[in-house]
Image (cartoon, rainbow, N blue to C red; front, side, top):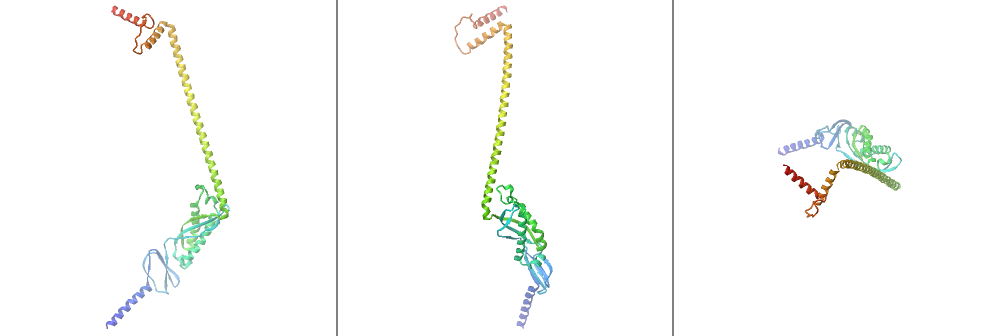
Amino acid sequence: MNKRRISIIAGIVLLLIFASILFIFQVRQSQVAVVTTFGSYSRTIEQPGIQFKLPWPIQKVYRFDNRLQNFERKFEQTTTGDAKPLIIEVYVGWRISDPKIFLERFNGDMMKAEQNLESLVRDAKNSVIGQHPFRDLISPREEDLKFDDIEAEIVKAVQTEAKDDYGIDVQYAGIKQLGLPESNTQKVFERMRADRQRLVKQFQGEGESRAMEIRSKAEAESTRILNEARAQAIEIEGQAEAQANEYYKVFQENPELAELLLGLEALEAATKEKTTIVADPSTPPFNLFREGVGELTGRNQNK
């Protein structure tokens, strides 16, 4: 009896396990799933967790990696808009945007999807670069380079077709490396050297022109300052001469005043330092002392 009960329990457990395999499946956080019924699309499951389905061959589940995918392609030769050969390596970032289209187009084969996307990107790359001159990709002047524009144009060229036909969203494309065919390398280096020398001469010419401009301004300013100084000197000289003429006219009209002032100047010069002088009191300018004392005595007596 016990053996029979154990057998029944074991059978039920096995049945449950078998049922879970047939009717239950799990979608992970990084996955998206498509369920088909008798080979035709049934539904898309984008939320992670435990899901239910009918057993095969009624329904079948396809799981795809929903994370951002990246692939890089080896160097391939292309031609610029001015007919210059160029070797270029690009990389692309993409993810599945429509699992239904992706399944119908590639039957869930990621490698096949990348091969088709590679062909699409190659055509877009050749078309875009064929519209840009060589200097947009290789130039000694950083402002001439147009990498951002070219990469954006490649993405724009493939996005619509990749999404509509492949169920793929191309999120970015970039230029990883550039190369030159061996036959063209020396020519490019020579052209770059010539461009650099031209720029050096241009900068030197601009520097000399600027220096001449500064020297010219400095000379003009110096001339202006000298002219102003000369004008001021002439003005001061004229004022001094006019004042001297005025004094001379006064002295002509008052010779006694002139004699007195000259005597005072001489007296001041003689007595500037502590010096003992022996002189005739009647001799100018020492007679001023005597005259001054006499006048002072006379004033005192009058008082």
